[in-house]
Length: 277
Image 1: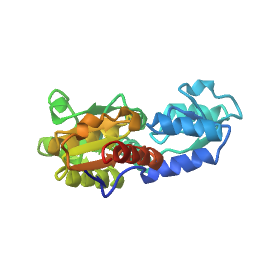
Image 2: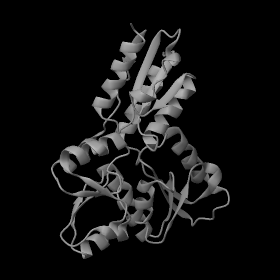
Image 3: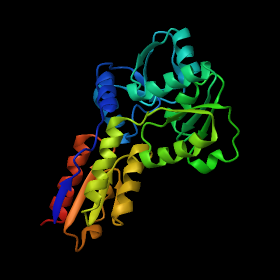
Image 4: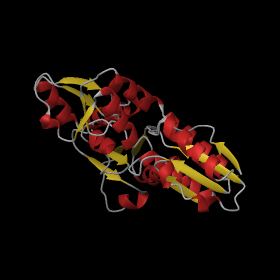
C-alpha cells in the first residue's frame, strides 16, 4: 500500500511560535491549553516545566503566565496585568487580527457577527473585544432570527471552512446596507484544507491526525470525508485500527495545525510496520 502525506499539514506558524515561546519560558504556566494537543502539552510540562492552569485568578504577583495561542478574553488579560503577573503573550497573530477588527468596528458603530463556535476559546476571546457585544453564528440559518443594524462587520474563526464562511457572507450582503467582510481565516488553514481536498480525492483511505478537541483538525476531517468515505480522525498511532487498510492501495495522511511532527512520524511508521509487511 502506498502512503503519502498531504502537500501541507501539521504545525502552523502560530503554533510553532507558541511552542518556542513556551520552551523559552521554563517554570511558567499556560493559561488554558497552549495548543489543542495533549501529547505536546505533556512534553512541554515534562521537558520544560511548563504547567497548565484553567483559572487566571490562580496566578499571583510575579508569576509567569503564558497566554495560549487561541487568546483569552480582554478583561482577563487586563486583570492579569493589573495583578502584576508576568504575562508572556503567545496568542497567534492570526487570532489577534479578528480581536482588533471587532474592537475597531464595534467602536465605529457596526454590529459584529462572528462565524465560529461560541464555546471555542478563540471565539470567547475575540467576542470580548466587541465593546457593544457580538452575535456568534455557525451557519447562515442562525442569522434568520437575528436583527442587526444597517452596518455589519463579519469575521470568522481562523480555522473554519472557507465555503461555509462565504455562505454566511452571502446571506448578509443583500440584506444590509453595508456589510464589511474580513478574511480572518489564516493562510495555513487555507493551505491545509486545499491539500487535504486534493489528496482525499485520490486516496482509498485517509488518516487525519490531531487532537479530538482541535477545531482545525475537525475541519480537515470533514473535508476529507466529503471525498473519501474511509476517513479516520486519530490522535496518535494508538488509535489506529489496521482493518481500515484491508484491500486499500493508497493511504493519504494529513494533520491538524497543533500536531507535532513526532506524532505524525509515529503514525506513518506504525502503518508501514503493520500494513506493509
